[in-house]
Amino acid sequence: MKTRILPVVIGAVLAGGMNVAQADVQVFGHIDTSIDAIDVDGGADDINLHCTTCSVGFKGSEDLGNGLKAIFMIDFQYDTINRNSNGSITDRDQWLGLKGNFGQVRVGTISTGYKSHGAMLDPLYRTALEGRAHGLQSSFHTGAGEELRGRADNTIRYDSPSFNGLKAVAHYTLDSDETDGEDEDPYGIGASYENGGILVFADYLDNNQSGTAEDTVWKVGGKYSLNSLAIMAQYEDWDDGDSADYDIWHVGASFTMGNNMLYFAFGQEDNEGTDTDAWTLAAMHSLSKRTKAYVGFNQEDEEGSGETDQFSLGLKHKF
Image (cartoon, rainbow, N blue to C red; front, side, top):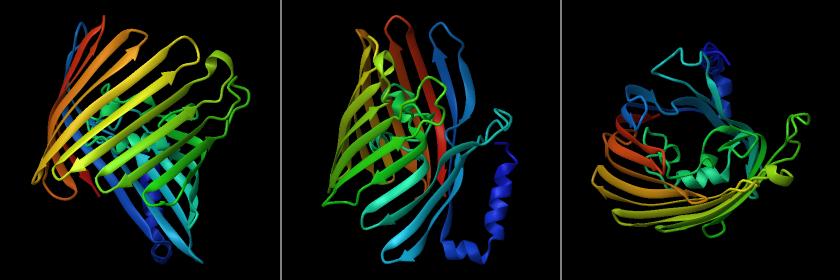
């Protein structure tokens, strides 16, 4: 999708005038810009600007009567720093669905419950220091596609209503290419419970392949918040269907003082005895309800391969 498509989409929405108002459309977006200094043992060091999952989109609903609503989202990712990085805009969550007393059903390209629950633990989510990019959470929280990525293409997702804080989520992905040798349909299920300052969840993913190509992963996690203090943890177990079994875990804590938050997390990935340790220390200041500045440091130390250090100073705005 070329960069010129986004202005066309925005123009079409604005030109809709009265139809847009009737459909209850909301424009939303996210811009995160940081300067990152990266030091890699035995590799090339770098200082550069970075735009972390900057995006703009449209979402809304239409009341269909009898407690039923049509819901939709169209979201696009772009790069504010390097307009020629790919010469394109990346599709993000883009779906259509129905919402009612039964919960909601959506079809299209949709973030999985596995990814959504992990994001609830990370106060640095969608910044240059987010845990899923720095050794604290697995790759199942990232990327897009049909094979157990954070955002699932060609997918149906169901979210239940809340039963006194208990919710269930499930998704099923249809294989779009029966000739690629991967002709099974991946799926995932999960559940979460929220009550006051307590959040707990569990998730399972399966790419539904046969033999050594089968990937299965499950996780449990949670967060406890008491006044200004929050403590979070997550454990993941990934079996790649061959010979490797990965354990990925992290624990973290945040402390809020007025408009300021301090955050520290430590995690480890164990791949059949080969460990990678990671930790992040960061501070974030809320300039307003939508704008935040942050500074922090992350280190990943892979056994036998050395360290990667990153220092970041960033500004994040949501609209």
